[in-house]
Amino acid sequence: MFYKKTLKFLFSLFLTLSILINPALAKEYQPTSSIKKEITQYILDNIDTKQDFEITVNSLDDRLKLPKCTIPLETYSRYSTLKAGTLSIGIRCRGKQPWSLYNSAKLKIYKSVLVLKENIGRNTLIYPELVTFQRTDITKLSRGYFTNFSQLQGATSIRNIQAGRVLRPAQFISQKLIKKGDKVTIRAKSKSFTIQMSGHALSDGKLGEQIRVKNSRTKKVVEGTVIEIGVISVN
Image (cartoon, rainbow, N blue to C red; front, side, top):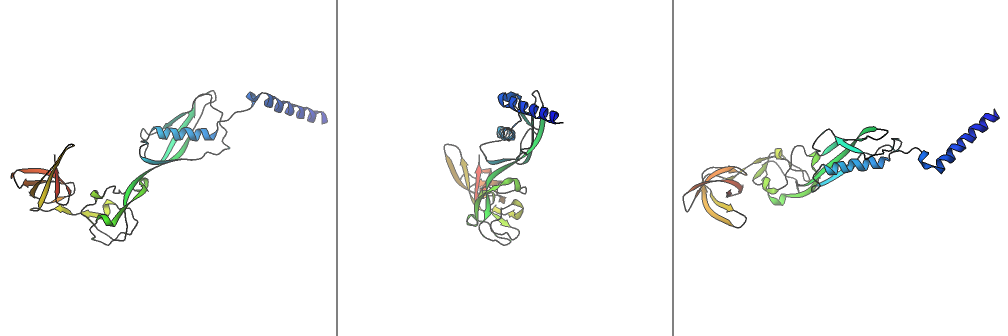
């Protein structure tokens, strides 16, 4: 019995010393940090990095023991386009000891969107002093948002809205910025010059709508886009 225990001890000691003398005999595992790094890089390679964004890759359990890959890791996704939200990214090794797994990551896209400075009631006409911009994760804004006050110009609230709330299209109705018979400014603009003429609207118009206008001087009827109160833009 004593003899067997001695042999077992000597064998274990020999194996330990062999590993210390020759590290190549030790089992090498793929660092989980390298997997996380590869997933992050894959996302960076497949999104517009000019936008304001944030990537958070789910941490893997350090107890995960995957053989160290002898060739570069491959990353992939089921989708050709990566959109904001929760992503599932695949990573695999095609080396001598192949393996593969999926890991999740969160991609947040931020934009400056309009929020209210103060509480407003129903049927309130929105004007610039009522709103401000706030950096917001648009992943959560599935019902829409505004990034420019011109998108809200002439809009009236259809319900009470609290201060600090992100403004959504469904909270407003567009008012007519131009009414039939109104005196309007006809604006023609190019890279090198801007020409303005006066005219009269031949129909009502909301923001972004096309209406017909008669030039006061030439009497010619032109069609343009309503861009603000009393102003239309023509090509």
